[in-house]
Every structure is written in structure tokens, then in C-alpha cells.
Image (tube, rainbow, N blue to C red; front, top):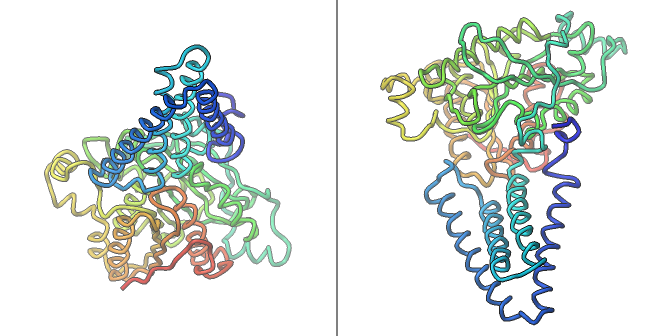
Amino acid sequence: MGAWLAKVHLTQGWLPASLFALTALALIVLTLTGLTHGRWRTLLRQAAIALGIGALGLLATWLVSDVFMLFGVSLGWMVIISVALGFLAVGFAVCILITARGWRRILAALTVLLCLLSTGLRVDIIYGEFTTLGSLFSVSLYPDYRDHKAARPAMSVAQWRSLASKGELPSHPSAGRSYSMLIPNGRSRFAARPADVYLPPAALSDRPPALPVFVLLAGQPGSPDRLFTAGAIPAMMDAYAARHEGLAPVVVSPDQNGSSSHNSLCVDSPVYGKAETYLSKDVPAWIRTELPVADQPQQWAIGGFSQGGTCSTQLGARHPDIYGNMLPADGELEPTQGRQEQMIRDYFGGDKRRFLAQVPARAMLERAPSRQRLFTAAGSNDKESQHNMMVIAKAATQAGMKVQAVVTQGSGHDWHTVKTAWEPGLEWMGEAMGLGPMSRPLADFPNIIETSID
């Protein structure tokens, strides 16, 4: 796939607008030609059948989403309605396909395809999962980090800010750069896919400061690239750096699963290997050796979305000597994969104590008192994640952590929640890490509601 094609946007721009317009035009032409040829009664029957198919689609999608919970969380009413409308449109086109002749039959067949594509794209826009054609086909957008060697830290962040106040900063670019890197797995032998790495402008100087680190994990199914593309991490960090003299955290998005179809639970297990060792030993060791970063746990954060959010509270709670901060969004209360009994048997050798040791709230309380910080978020349309967030936030508070919980308005279990929450989360943690004061209070960020932890 060409580089230009990989960068074509799926959630905005000419591609979705063109696809939706072509789909609407095809349906209009099929309808009007049915009327002009005197087939209005046939057209009414076809429309009635399509409405019935749409109603069945609505019922089936609701059952799969909210009753049987096939995906573990509700799909949300925006998705359920979009899928039902897709059933209706496809049903209408199929009815015409069965009875039509000639060019109208060909148009009906094309309309079926257009309706399917439009429905899929509409669902993707709601979730914000695949943002480019490249992300859809797992095509990396970034060059290999081995072709770029960052300089070692030459000063502290405080010294960098002091130079900035005097107008004496070392030369650095106006924007950061993103790379791809297969992080060595010498201790774990975990079969990870390449990680994504973001270096802020200050890190690209010949004399960079020792910067904070964000280790961020995508959900499952997903990939490290998904966090950078769907989560818009490079743009978010560049905007922050522009307000802070080129300073922003170094971001590494490692692979915690090994495949989109795997769920490692971020534990060491016989199922998918030593994921916890990889994330707590191999990844931090490579970051410290190869990137201009600070060493103190208070300068390191681990975060993630969905399954990645669950992993971040597991790993953060269990490894406070590495990760002094946690930034989960829409996470769960504990590692989850199918039936719990089977999961404990497969991943933990039947030892329930090993499983319970991975439950974030328990791990936090067992290691209290804690000096860690937790910024946690959930979407307003994701009630289960809100419940999970509050349970973990209360445990973190009891353990002595400084905790901030927010609910993002108008989003659910999707990347819109991540992008809305992590902008203030970045500023909240950035201030604590010494990068500079917050640009505004949390309450002034759009679509953010602070939640009381009682």
C-alpha cells in the first residue's frame, strides 16, 4: 500500500463524505426509477419488507449488545441504530435486486455493497477505531527508530525551562516525531509486535532534557499503531509541547498481546507468554537505555484504553517502583477472558491466588501506603466502565494515592473518550511531573465532568 494511500482518513475528509453521498444517491435513484416505471405498489411492498428487516436488525443488534453482551460492553445506541439502518438499507436494495432487470439490477447489487461499506464506516466513525486506510490494514505509518538515535539527556527539565526563560534553548524542531521499534525481549521472550515511539521536540535536540515517560497500551483487539492513530497521540503531544517550550512526555506504545486476536491479560502465563515481564522489565530497560528520559518512578506513567486500561492499573499497582502514575480509560475491574474458572485454569494454572494478585484494587491496597497518582476516565455512555472506574478510584484513594476521576460527555467505550480525557490528563500529570502549569482548570476542558470519589 502506498504511503499516500495509507494516510487517507476514514473518519473525516473526502472518503467518508464521498461514500455516504454515493450510497444516498444510489438509494434515491432506485426509489425514483421504481416510481417512474409505475411500480409504486411493488416499491411500497419492498419498503415495507425493508422496514421489517430493519426492525429485526435493531432487535438482533440490541440483543447481541445489551442482553448477551457478546462484546463484553454495550455497543451503545448510536451503533445499534446505525447497524439497524444498515439492515434496512441493505434489505431494501436486496428486495429490488431480486425483482429488477437490466441496469437497475446492477445498480441494486452495487447499492448493497455501498450500504454495507457505509454502515461499517459509520460504526467506525462512532468508535474512532480505524482512522486511516493504513490502520485498517495494519500498515505502519512511521519509520524505524533504529535509523534515528536520540541523544542522551544533557540536563533536567527544570534546567531546560530555565534556559527557555532566558531565550537560550538549544535548537530543536517545532514538532515531535513518531517511530516504530521492535523492542528487544531478552528477559521475557514475549512475541510482541513493533511498538510506536513518540519523541517530543525537546527530545530531538542535541542536548535534550531527561523527560517524563508515558507507556500507553491500546485495547484488544488492537495494535500499538491504533493508539497513535485512533488516540491521536502525536497531535496531542505536539499541541502540549507548543505550549511548554518543546517539552512533553516521551510516549511508547508497546504491544501487550502479540496479536489482535490474543489477550495476554498482561500476565506471565503459558497461554501467550511472559507479557508482564516484557512490560515491567524489557520495555522499561529499552526506554532507559535508548531514549532521553528521567529515571524516577514519579516521572513514569502507564496508561491505556479498554483492555489496555485494565493492564495499566494492574501493572501500575503491581510495579510502583517503575510506574509512579496511571492513566486508564474505560478499563475493567480485573483481567477478563471468557469464563473466570476457565481463565484461571488456563492462565494461572488453576491458582486463584495468582489471579487475585492481578486485581488492581487488591494490589493497590496490599501495597499501601502509596505515593502514586491516578487519572482515570470513562465515557458518559459507558455505565459499566464508570462503575469500574469508581471502584478502582476508591481503592486508590484508600491506598493514599492522589486521584482524579472524570467522565467524558457524549462518548462511550470508544477512542473519543480517550482523546477527550487524555488532553486534561496530560496537563494534570505534566504539571505534577514539572513540565509546566496546567493551561486551565479541569472543569474548563470541553466535555469533562469531574467525579467525586466518596
